[in-house]
Amino acid sequence: MNENMSNIAKPVVNWRLKLGVAVFILSILLPVVGISLLPTFELSTTMAASLTTGLLVSAEVMGILAIAIMGKPGYVYIKSHLFGFLRRFGPPQKVSRRRYNFGLIMFVLPILFGWLSIYLADYIPVYESHHLTYAIVGDIMFLVSLFVLGGDFWDKIRALFIYSDKVCSDDK
Image (cartoon, rainbow, N blue to C red; front, side):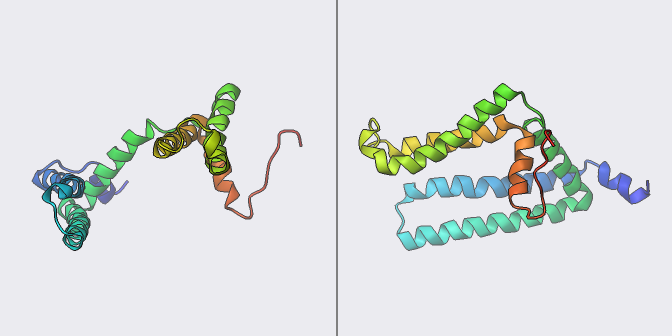
């Protein structure tokens, strides 16, 4: 392994890395906090849209600035730690048959409900007054189902969009 690769894997934790992380966190918090506080100022629609755009653009610029401050070794270090942390909570590659079947039910129910609710809205209890709640619950169920189904399901979904992929069955 050459000298440059060892520097990328373990950067020196110095003021540049700390400042870069602080600017990166600020780039995330600035639009979230700023945009959530905008309605309290009773601004015109044009002014609110302009401020929202300004906050989002400045957040993007600050994100790029944070990477420039950290340098490549700091960016790679933070990226590897962040994705390593998120990977622990990702779906497992293999799941049991019961979990897979339960995940399929969770996957299909929101899709069917979304399709049928248009036609059966009069028969669904309190649907008219709480349609947003039904939509949010369906979206959450759909997203959770992707984690319940496991990594093999992700491979199946990905294969739908690759023309050259073929179905491989254990029976053949």
